[in-house]
Image 1 (spheres, protein in one colour):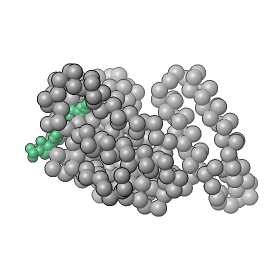
Image 2: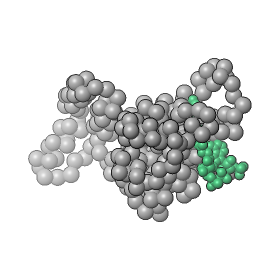
Image 3: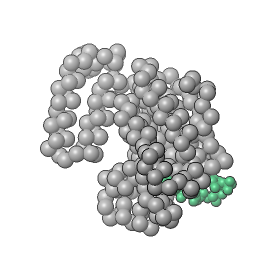
Length: 260
Ligand code: CO8
């Protein structure tokens, strides 16, 4: 699908940064099946493009995303969601090699919060509101929220948020370590673009390996994580970017990474 054929997202590129903007304003960017397919397709296309070094995912001023589309889900049965493996395709975002930055203004609730947590960094505007309100609908998080939120903020706060379904403002999300940075809402997307451009200027190979190593810390025990990190570190010595990066440092010049 070409970049202007999507109907629920807008896709753009700024030099080496791919930008995906959720675009269902009438539903506060609620995540339906079509939107999921488009976001995953656009993200995978950027991931396969050697000209792209980072991806920014954002929504509108009012909502990053107000959750999974409740109207689409309301009539589904147990058999439907199991047979469809409903929303399983979102997992693909966790497997991207390219670093991803969520730029969050307004509501990031339910699946919206989970989508932000699927990204590597979360830049939150000071108007951002996070939460896992699924309990109020008689369901629970289903796109990894109970796992990623708990790892990000710890059991005590995750239980508080998931069992009460309450909303959390960006200053609390910052304090708990859920987000990378909080900025004035009017600067959220620009800040995310600048961070993404900074990352995209690094060695793409090193960035991908660094991301894999940090994710291992998030997903595994210490001994396994340290072992994986060491092997990833060793593998950077098979790249031209390692030779160039270190030679540039010694020669007191900027590195010219070729991403190989
Ligand atoms: N789904 C569908 N439509 C939505 C959603 C949603 N999640 N959120 C908002 N909308 C729609 C509203 O229905 C409304 O449409 P309409 O004008 O046609 O009635 C429009 O967006 C604007 O919304 P509001 O009028 O409600 O705006 P407010 O500013 O009054 O309120 C809120 C904003 C607080 C965000 C409110 O809309 C709200 O509470 N939304 C629902 C939030 C929520 O519960 N999210 C969790 C959904 S469940 C989920 O994400 C589970 C994920 C895991 C599933 C995976 C399965 C495997």
